Image 1 (cartoon, rainbow over the protein chains, first blue to last red):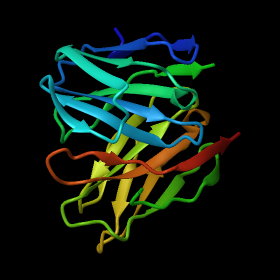
Image 2 (tube, one colour):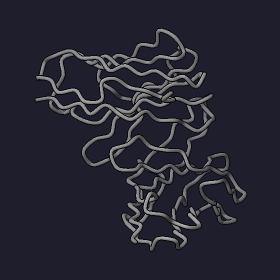
Image 3 (tube, rainbow over the protein chains, first blue to last red):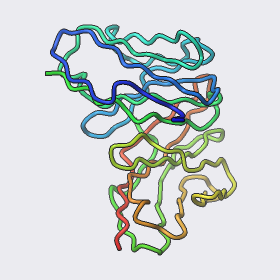
Length: 112
Length: 111
């Protein structure tokens, strides 16, 4: 009964490919997030959805497109993958924008 | 553009208190201080947060100075499982209330 789950845990792919990462939370939260943690361990917010509505959209390339089919799911689709996209991607959720965030285990993406 | 500064690393003996400092001298009146930690290869974990008053929960205590320019996270009896990177974060006030993460303090709890 994992609170925030992500699939896959590891993703290795070639440059130029398109891939998706899925995230699900069973906490009944209204808000979900995608973060990117690079090799220097900086954790940067990419997107935030509140009640399926996009709230935060940081300066992320258009190749990244989040999709929230319902409040429990926030998927991340990445087109035309580049070497610089290699990182660990974390999904998180919170009851609202004002509450503490619960993180998933991360997806380690490696682009060759 | 992190709004906090923390020592890059600290050591603590098992069973002793770990006191992790954080400087947030530019914090605004309505900005909260949050602490998270990240154990190796796992997702970050929420610990505690506060605005002005000191806070305590089952994991830790948070001491915020009166001028709010710094704070200290206290793990009263550190265990080996507390070895992690500890992030002190200021939550930006406003509609999106995003968290600005720094590089944190890598705490090593030694036996």
